[in-house]
Image 1: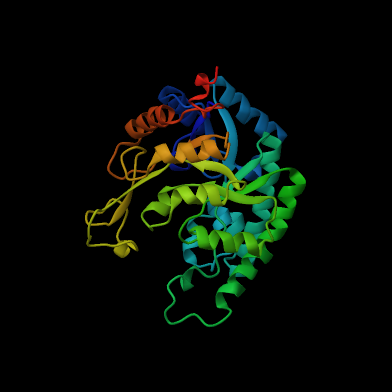
Image 2: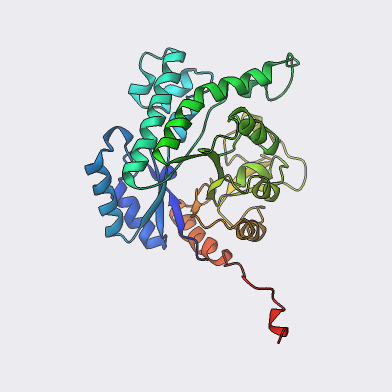
Amino acid sequence: MSRPVTLFTGQWADLPFETVCKKAQSFGYDGLELACWGDQFEVDKADAAYCKARKKLLDKYGLKVFSISNHLVGQAVADRIDERHKAIVPAHVWGDGDPEGVRKRAAAEMIKTGEAASRLGVSVVNGFTGSPIWHLAYSFPPNLPGMIDEGFREFALRWKPILDAYKELGVKFALEVHPTEIAFDIASAKKALAALKNHPAFGFNYDPSHFGYQGVDYIEFIYTFSDRIFHVHMKDAGWSDGPAEAGVFGGHTEFGTKGRYWDFRSPGRGNINFEEIIRALNRIKYDGPLSIEWEDSGMDREHGAAEACQYVKSVDFPASDIAFDSAFDK
């Protein structure tokens, strides 16, 4: 099994799309995971001709596309909307800023994203869901009975029409389980699936970097949701062996600030055990892309992206289809 190694363009959206293609080719990538912001993949322009042109440009640089990602708009579907969202969603989604209007327009945009993915010929849309109850993650003042369950019901009510549309399109939505989302660990991911009655179009974009520093078993996540791992991010995080000035919650500091308990790292330079991740992915027979979402505040991104590509290719390996000692059975 030789899984393609792709580069997520979300952290490169300040550059023109063709420039990103050139760089990805030079770094050694097999393809791209296209972000739906910047000019990487523009949902509002993504008719058949646009999608054909995008694939032609990818072909020019020997690159494939296996998924697109619309984290920023997805965040607004079920979130408690405030002025922060204006900076991350397109102007036509923000509109007049009325919170319910923003949520409804974001939901419509996510359906359009699924339609665009289908025209592009990919079957996975990665993203965020937002959460109406993230502010209740730390239960003080104590959460009242039913508040959490009501939040999951609201999430399901807002996302089910999107997922129904995806099912009709033959497209799956892969939530990147992450703080601020409806699911941010194994327990909450189980609740999200249950709220959606195990909708067949809903699964996960597995990203271990969001689990390790929390103390979540990121290997067990793969086994628990083996039939729901639709996409994989190879992203690393490093965390302190001892106490830090800013703990797990970050102390209202920016990424890269000295004294943080944890931070994102270029793959292979943090604490995530990618060897065990590959073994687990082999066991569940995951054969999709290994996509590098590159983030490291302390490293030049071009150096890091090139290094990360080679690292991930070196750590991946095919599973054996025979027992190692079967050669003795002669």
